[in-house]
Image (cartoon, rainbow, N blue to C red; front, top):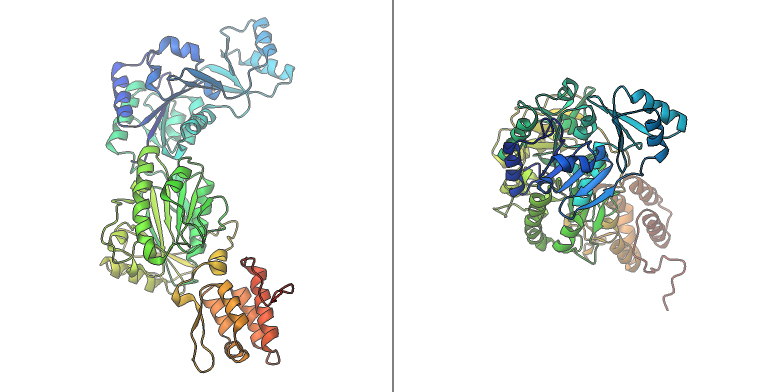
Length: 575
């Protein structure tokens, strides 16, 4: 289910003439029994609300005073979400004969045409306050306090995300409230401007509209509702934006090593995390160990437990990188098989995480795995899988894919490989500009796009290349001129250590052939470092000791190596 929270306005939304129909109460009770959290978000003062509404305990939390007050009807605790109004304001309005006049813990309220006296009093007293209107009501609140801010405070209290909320209202003061929710609905008798701006205009008025919304929520009809305002930017096609849905997407990013898969993923993640979607990045090779804005769990010496991951994810504001660089390749599918049900359980209970990102997805769900405990990407919001070889993925994992992004110089080949693995006809890919290709399910051809890059480039692969375990095909092998040895450098730290003990002939053999710069360029994807090393390789007069020292210095300047002395360190003491 996409939503696990229903937030509703009170007057002329839940209630009509101040009263809530029994059928509407029954619809809300049905939602509550199904595990849906209920929030009441109203402009009324709390005492006024409780005097007319006998079922406050139906709601998990109540936001009153148009976002100024948070009330827990079960604990009967009340917290002001902003400073109280200055006493002189209410007194000034009383002296001016303003009536009715309500003074709450945060809000001061009256009705039109007394907004004239309200604005005059605010100006004369030099107060920094805002005036909010709603169908003739005039509400005075501190800056930034509204139903949207109150909704966010309630969600934070419950550990829930606004991306799991459907909200419903009817008046001017509900615009920000509906906009803050993932899905905003308006009852049939709502103001025309609100119905025009909302995501879902309902057929029923007031309480009947809320009951209608509850029925749609329970039936899963809202899951497939197209919400273009939440789509994430991917790139441009001849100047037009191309965006992807943020729910129900099974996205595969595929292409050769060094072709730009991480660049695509980084761009999407930056925008998703920036918009408050909780992302879980399963990182088998340490590629995201320095990814900004997320909590990194695990390192080369420690694999995070599934319980640790689940605990951090209970707060929707924490996206997580699960660094599995310390886990053997053969053990990764089993770890993922344990992790996935916990994530789906969290999603069912809390409505988040929203995105599961699987780097090197074939390490987690290899072709030999016949069953994946995930029936639809929507069970985890959306799923993004990254791989070099689509055919190396489990058929069950490929069955989750409904969109493919191909990167590299030959995207046609990558799309064809995916189509073959799925038993589909390869799509046509028209000629044209672009650095990536997108193919969506149900279309006969792909389209070329220009990727909208991330605002901040991520420092890629630093820890994996420095101290992790690179795969055999990406490791460097010292063989010597006569192929008498085969010393594997699994990372840059090992490379520097092995180079220290090599005989001069072996070191120079690879140096003169350009093997070092080729490895750094092709397997590490670091063209800048490769160019610097290549310059040393071309210097035929340089000796083994000086070039070894210089290569070690260049690597150390760009990558964080473990703090262990080597013969290349000026302070090294080999006694």
